[in-house]
Image (cartoon, rainbow, N blue to C red; front, side, top):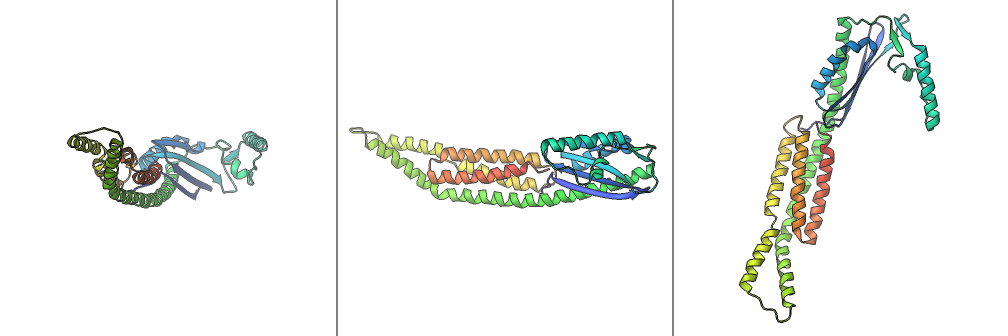
Length: 290
């Protein structure tokens, strides 16, 4: 089964009168592109977080965020009022200038901004960090589950599109023999219209055979069938096959394009166009495969 790069996970829990929330989102990307935002309280653990994300998520454009909210009556947390006011004024001014709505819950937005909340005690003991990592793992598990669901949808789409291309490939066959006779007839008619022109019929047959062989698409059909089979086999090998599926789709495109250039037949060319359309849909979605 394929696995998508698109996913979202969110988890939260309480520890020492603080509500700790972890959000992680991933989109498709050629490589792993990490954006990690942590409160100052956990900054020293950023490398551990990055290593975990790299190991678990492998590839994608990943936005990772931890934010902390105080839920106790007593707190060692202080609001940086000057910074909060500065952000408030900038957001309000930008909203007015762009003509967009301001947030309904200002504090929920402003308190998430880095450094608005400052902790008097910046040391985090091992017990708290282990607790935070359980929340991180919970959010990652949700994201992975989301990726698998998206992957199942992609898997069904790929099966459908490959089946459609295979059916279209079979639809070409009836036109191949007809095409040969049409080509031969057009050339013969053209020669007969040349007044007083005589030609060696044996030589004509030899040249015709050579010309028709140049239009033969059996090799392209065979290679396309093999590429489609390889595509289906590759997608079922597990995660990390997205780039390989992209390469196989490119090879499929080459064979379809060659068939189109060789077809010399209106109905065959129409079928080739439909095959290209099915393949384009595969190429678009392959970009999202892990």
